[in-house]
Length: 270
Length: 245
Image (tube, rainbow over all chains, first blue to last red):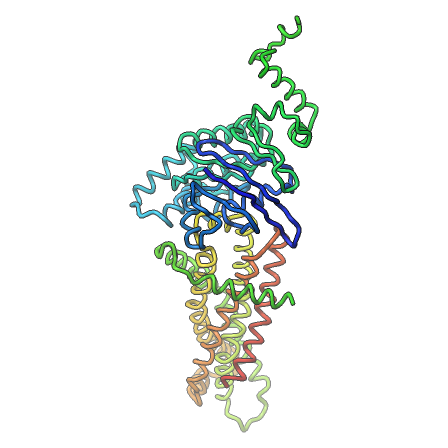
C-alpha cells in the first residue's frame, strides 16, 4: 500500500498541488484522473521521487520515502516499475535488450536465466515475435506492451502507469487496460495509473482519485462515480452528450432497470 | 546572473557523476561503446582535416618564403611546429566540438525529452554517472590519441604535397623535421588535447542533459553546445599558451 499525506508542490511560488492525501491499495488499480494541468503528473513525479515535494509524506508499505536519503531512495526505486506515456524505450536497443537492461544492471543471474525471464515477461504481454525489433519498428500498442514488460521484469511491488492509453485506438486501449489489471492481480502489485481515458476509469478503476486544480476533489470507485453528484467530476468525466447517455445507460443497468445486454423492453413496457 | 546559475548547475552535474556505479560491468561496456562512438567514429573526419591542414601549411609557408638566404628545410620546421602546437590539437578539437558535441547534446536531449532519462532514474540508476561519465572518460582516452594521429597525418600531408608539387623534396623536408625539434611542444599539445576533450564532452552533455521542451529545444541545445564549446576551446587555447609557453 502507498499512502500520501498532505503532499504539496509548487513552482516559482505558484502552487501546483496542494494538500493531497490518499491511499493506494495493493492488488488494485488505483486511478488518478483529472484534466490537463490538474497536477496529476507532478503528483506522480513526487510519488516516484523525480520531484521532491515541498511538504507532505509518501509512505511505501510503512517506509517513509520522503525521509529517505538518495541511496535509500535508489534502492527503493528498484521495487518500482513505471510505464511512461511515450513508453520511454531506449531507441538504440532492441525490444529484448530494453527488457534485459534492468536485469543486466541489477541482477546477478546467469545469461540463460535472464533470457528466460525476458522471454517470460514478453510472453506475458503477448509479444512473442518482437525480440529483435527496435522501438522504431513496432506500433504504439506494442511499445506500451514492451514498456509494461520492462517495468515488471524485476518483479516490482509498485507499478506506475502514466497515461497508458494515450495515442492508442480504443480496442488496443482495452487490451492494455486488461493487461495492467491482470498483472496487478496476478503479481499483487500496488498499481497507480494516471489517466484521462474514460474507458480505463470505468473498466479498471478499483479506486479513483479525481484531482481538480491541484487538489483532491473526489474519491471513490467506478460504480460510485456513476452516481456521483459532484458537478466538477461529472462535467469532466461525462463531458459529451454521448458519454452522458452512456452514464444514464449504466445507471439503469446498475439499478436493475435494464439487463446487462441493454435490453430495454422491460423499461419501455413500463 | 543566468550564467552563474548555469555554471553552478554544470559543477553540480560534474560532482553528481562521481558515485559508486550500480554495476561495474555495465559501466565498462558503456565506456567501450563510447570509445568506439567518439574515437573510431571520428577517425575519418580527423584524418581528412589533418592531411589537408598539413598540405596547405606547406604550400602557404613556401608561398611566403621569399628570402633565398633562409634554407628551404625551415619550411618543414614551420609546418611541424604549427601542426604540433596549434593545428593538430586546436583545429581537430574545434572540428570534434561540432561532430562529437552535437551528437552528445542531441542524444542526451532526445533521451530527456522522450523520458528515457526519467526511466533510468526510476530504475535507480544515477543517470549522470551512467550517461555522462563514460562519454567524458572516453573522450579523455580517445581525443589525445586522435590529436597525435592528426599531428602525424598533418606532417605527412605537408611532406607529401611538398614532394608532389616540387616545392620541397622529401630529403630536405625530413632533414628540416629533425632540426630544432622541441619535445616539450608535444607535451604542450597533449595538455591542450586533454583540456579540449573535457570541454567538448562536458559542455554538450550539460546542455543536452538539461533540455526542456521538444525537438526545437534539442536543436537549440545542440547549437548552443557547439558554439559554447568552440568559444571556450579558443579561450582555453589562449590561456594555456599564455601559461605554458
